[in-house]
Image 1 (cartoon, rainbow, N blue to C red):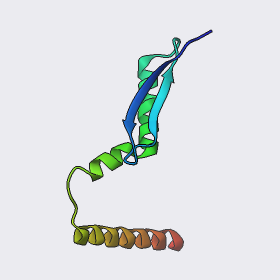
Image 2 (tube, one colour; image 1 turned 180 degrees about the horizontal axis):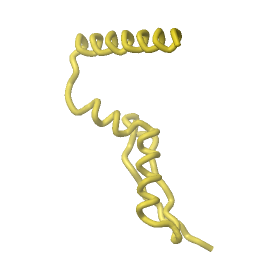
Image 3 (spheres, rainbow, N blue to C red; image 1 turned 135 degrees about the vertical axis):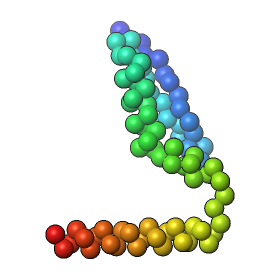
Length: 82
């Protein structure tokens, strides 16, 4: 029987979910690290971390969201034309 080792990752902002992977004896560390980084990317941990690095004023937040919606609309129009 293969006994896996558990590797734990960072916590989400809510503190409820913690990412972790099992590393099996036959698995290389590089492969396990790749799986772990993909799991963290899917969970959005790095995005959360970068978002909390500096304070964003409410006016800046509104401006960023407005720009994002503008780009999204333009992209949708481009795709509809083709």
